[in-house]
Length: 254
Image 1 (cartoon, rainbow, N blue to C red):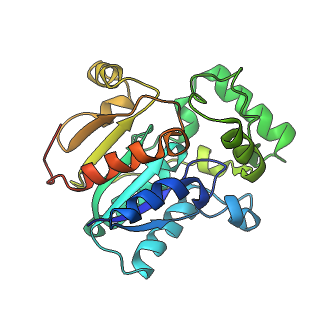
Image 2 (cartoon, one colour):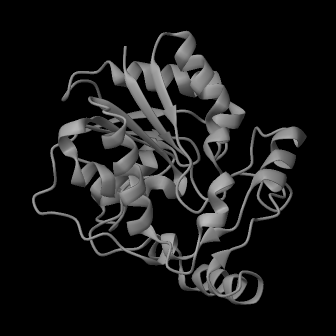
């Protein structure tokens, strides 16, 4: 049986993993769903200084203070930064790092750098006008405006995301990680939902700065076609994949 630490992406708290965590516990696994600093029920902790470093420190503390070993660390979406930084810092405690519809950023690259200039400018405008200059507002989660990312979500899911979501500290998007060279040899798995694996691998082989770090030795891949939030749209299927990859040998599978 594996020890899982589940980290939600932007705007959400540990509650986002409830159905996945329940399925994993039913199978006998040890599961720790955590809320990153400044998000969810911890939104009141957020300040303009809250950023990637804050959340990395927080996640490391959760793992170390909990005495957790051989952790399967699971990051969804924007949690990629905190999980990557924590795994880099305490590689001896991490058995596998799993990215759910996300991936690690290259050293020196912030999450916002993934956006094209137009999308980045729009995000910065929202933060300035609606987020007090330091928070990313909760999106409307409108399936008509964003059908691909919100595919598979019910009206109940969307309502919960709008009502329970909290503004995201902008520093978690603007701060980069400085990663060690060489990187730890931690086994990594990508579970792709909105981008087909063939496209991920093609972009990596073509030298895309983000996708190129998601290919090569140490990586395994799984595909779970749905929207960007498979913990809501396909929770039991996601739990089954997490259980499956947790049992892989360090260099096993493809």
